[in-house]
Figure (cartoon, rainbow, N blue to C red):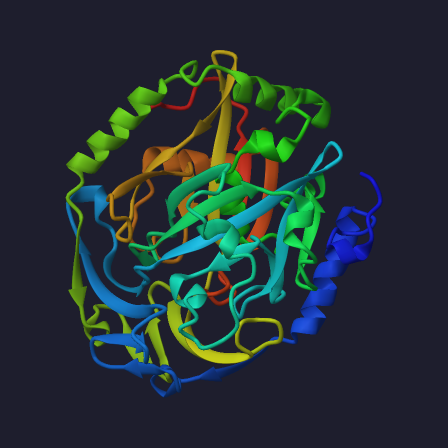
Length: 428
């Protein structure tokens, strides 16, 4: 990549260590500090028997819900959920320098992050934030994602953690621009080469979950630049070749054509009988208000209150509730070669926060909420056994602190596993 002055906002001497050094500098500059407060004494929030909500009626609230249904699709019972009906914007700007794609990443300090500051999308904002309900500064680069006539590389509506949010959705957007048109992005944004950001994705607590969501929904050809996405040369091994072959194959070449997959999802949604009914937060079965927190001891989760002071955000101080789960969560995506092509094993996820009722999810997903309620089915038990099998190959694994703007140091391990099997995984 040709040399550019640091004032251009391009990461100088681009390598992973330079990126980590910049994040560390931003972390020191942010100087994020937390003060723990009782939920019923948060200055900007109102707590009643029914709900915990912001004094403006915006941003988000904590509400109670009774989640009922039939059979294995209804393990949730009473839950305290985050209600955030606004559609947020998660967006990355990309540009080209010579043959390389660069991505405008933000070093964003969040109260719930491990390490406070992690890489985030160019824009990561709720509607209340970018409408400036807080009375603070405008959201930088927002105009690039709100122009209805702008050429957009990718734009999808995605849900967010249906076990904790009630009907929350974000627009995941990727847009290519001319590097010079954005000007100097400022100290908390850097144009990062995609090949460097790609390596950072494998590091613990470095790239936040919102950024990962945009990337996986984005235009992979755009990110690859003039190099082909998943080209074998970038991963000169057998698995790299398998990825390349799978990515380049016909979409209908798998075990189930795309139309059949969508038909199956539609059938699942039609058959789902899950009903989410509002219920006062102080009347939820299994939940108590104790020492200023809303707690479910059986599931090992709680909502706690914090006061936040930080440099570089739209406002320098605020207060809010955060959700915390105790044990480390686990999310596993299993891959297997079937009929010569690499396949990924998806599961049916029926979660109370999904408006559609059911979505495709990872092969295995466990957390504090599900573990006490959901009996392990045969395939889940099999997958758990594969995690500890020396014959299985872990292709990728890293730790994440999920959604640091709403969760407090809630850690999950995300892994891509290739079991060594004599037979095929079921497809049902």
